[in-house]
Length: 231
Image (cartoon, rainbow, N blue to C red):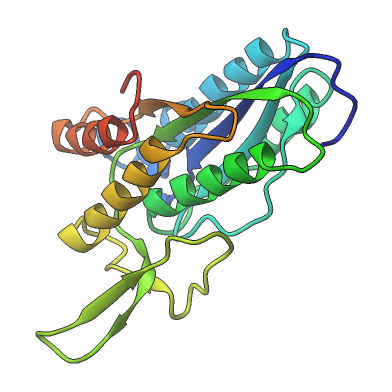
């Protein structure tokens, strides 16, 4: 908690950003040399508009969760009004590189919200929101592989914390497979099942930055599993 909060109810918003290499493409999935047409820059502009909207309220707390090959990092909720410039600078500094591990972004956002709700000193009632901004293409999952072909055993990372990108990443990095989409769905179910001690769930919203119907269908499926209000 970064400052005093006189309100009985606060909004907690985890913004989950796809910063993978495919976000350098345009919305049609093609290479572009115009910055304004890159999905990552379209995402940034829309995300900063959201922050401006949040900053009009006194009692909204926001954390930014960028993900690519993983969502490694440290995430803290800050007051949107008093930290609007900081949040927008963080968004502006995001670059697009690596694979796409949507499940890991949702996992870290989920535990950030859960941790915030479970603070012993929390004297307010949080209303929880997760906004997923993604192009829809999932190419990695967090987990480990053991055994021998064709009888591999996979153990997905479902707990909190950073992953080791050297030995806790599954997938090819450039194709969408059942192995990685199953991870997305597993984490999405965890998000959907969450209910805090105060009886609040996590309201999920998903925004796709791709015109590909197959990619849109995937993120819509994941978002629906997570209980998304729109995709």
